[in-house]
Length: 251
Image 1 (cartoon, rainbow, N blue to C red):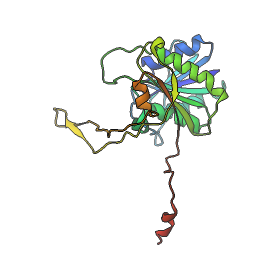
Image 2 (spheres, rainbow, N blue to C red; image 1 turned 90 degrees about the horizontal axis):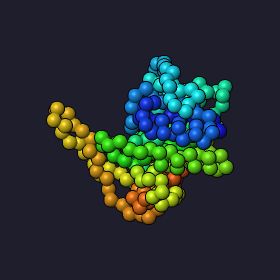
Image 3 (cartoon, one colour; image 1 turned 90 degrees about the vertical axis):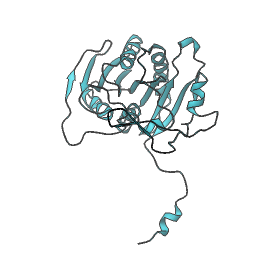
């Protein structure tokens, strides 16, 4: 397969490099189009008021790679455009340094890049390693890259509709200690209230407060048990509930 890699941690992040090495070692053609700097929590923002600039860079294992001064979603769509002659079979976004489970998925540039790729017509996978993104420790992305490779090679026989994607979250464990891969639902993690703490410079730093929840089939619970989690996500934010009462508002 020909694989396009993107992310929100930047083109020089270790997660995307681990993917490039794993996919190229497995015999797949690899292209990379990713932000030229970290763009975490950019969600699905795109550049519409100015030009995007793509600079050629070297990524081991990649046939071609570009660093782009845009958002993760920009990189997904521009990457598909730049590789249009070669043709891309699948887009993988990640490996994100930090989880993208529960409500975090709506903020995620990693998820948004995969969703943008799917909206452009390409099968897409978002991959994340469940670590503290604020930690100074170096993580091993190798096991998560092996899992992402297995999922990606499984995906062609299990396509999703346009605009839908698979989201993978992998615990920070050696490959042999991962308990397996399970289908899960997004955990209902919502904020109770806006919460910020002073940062010492006169500003305020975001500090989320999540509501407690329970349920064995939620991504957060299963990941805490040592399982890799796989979820189907889509752009469709519509609430699945009756809306007959909406027609009674009148004007």
